[in-house]
Image 1: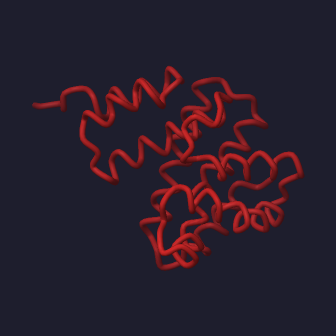
Image 2: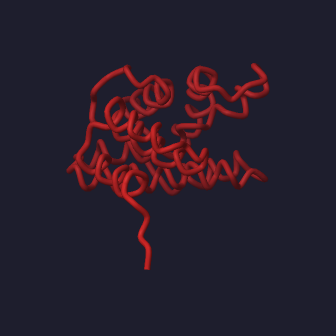
Length: 167
């Protein structure tokens, strides 16, 4: 499976919507960094990378069909949009199945404890906390309820829970 091909396809799909492209690229970068630091096996990392790129791919369909980009609609519409992209990028059956599951659950925080899943949740939260300007209290709650990896917790702590550097 070629991640660079998935990125190109996702950028083309989100043409004219740089905010969405910026979002998935940031989630991809954080999930990749966390996965590497946590020692993910190469194949699992590749699947996580693909899921991070495509995690919000259902937003346009969710808005078109449901008038909302709420998480439940992203989860329900995303896999159908992602499947042909994954196939075109050369994903095998097992890779497609796992990526589609991750997309279909990326807003369901209690859907499992698998490391790839937890990392995707953490990376998406790190980006959403900035983009949505979440208050410190939301980050403190997330630290307890969402974050499982040492790396993700460290990133959350350093980005949102420590005092800002002052010269």
